[in-house]
Length: 176
Image 1 (cartoon, rainbow, N blue to C red):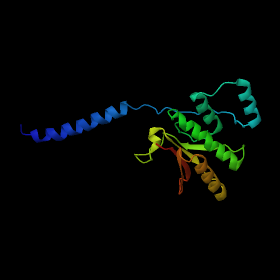
Image 2: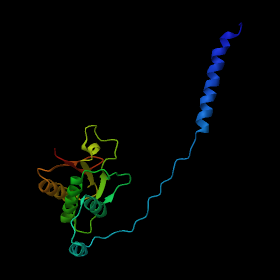
Image 3: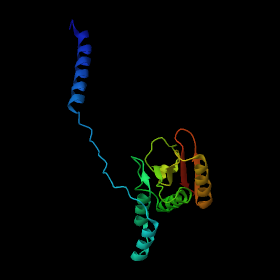
Image 4: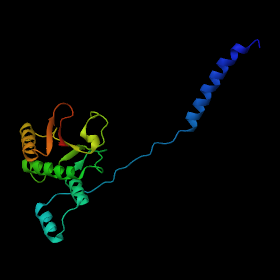
């Protein structure tokens, strides 16, 4: 009874060692992900039209989504699988805008779908109703042309916002 005051610190030290031991025994290696190397696909408009005439079948939702994925590059970590089907069509219209300004050789880059934790809480990205396209490395007159043509083409269906600053991009979101 004389040394009872030492019991609490000893139990605290034992508890710390027990937690440390549990943490050390629960170490698992972080899985390593190697993205697949895909060959560079160059778009040939004539071949694409020949294929459409040959197949004679309309695109379904999955076909339009696959076409959007094929016609764009996606920044690492971009999640587009739950995208609203109408956003696939809007994304393809933005691709068409890029081609009108930059030529058919240019492949736009989608920098965000529903994947980025730094959007506002009320962002349409979390509802799968918004896409971001990279325009950071375009010339100023090309950026202006892309934004103006996109606004004109999607008027009444989607909002097009030129977000400037360090993370400059073209934000496209579905109107309600």
